[in-house]
Image 1 (cartoon, helix red, strand yellow):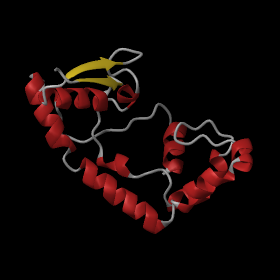
Image 2 (cartoon, one colour):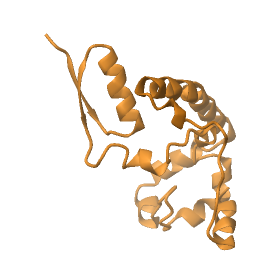
Image 3 (cartoon, helix red, strand yellow):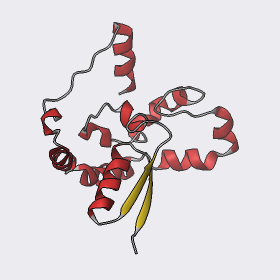
Image 4 (cartoon, one colour):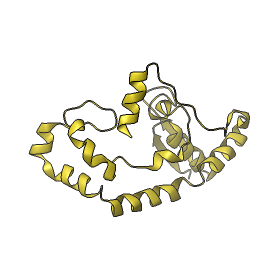
Length: 155
């Protein structure tokens, strides 16, 4: 009897899961509503960044929280209505932003992502595309000085 699995999402995580299952002899069906890599994985442009392990709810969130309420910011969208009608979620989110909690989450995420480049390199070697891996860092560009200032204000 052949074991089968269904993987939802053809981004980097979904494809990696599908490959790992196939290596274990499991027949995999990979489903996505768009072309592979066109959703979440598209937005990160293939960047493997250890800086991405810092969660949003850290102590640096506290001075910015009012700006997120009612804002359509891609990082965090909070509505005043939800904040007052369902305060439990927001209070828990803020409680988890304490330095001790943030440090524990960052350490856990760091442990999960420590071998990211090594694992990607192995997958890319198997696919014959290892020449596409660059380990030279990143360059951030803004179209305007105002865009740069806005980005700096968020961090």
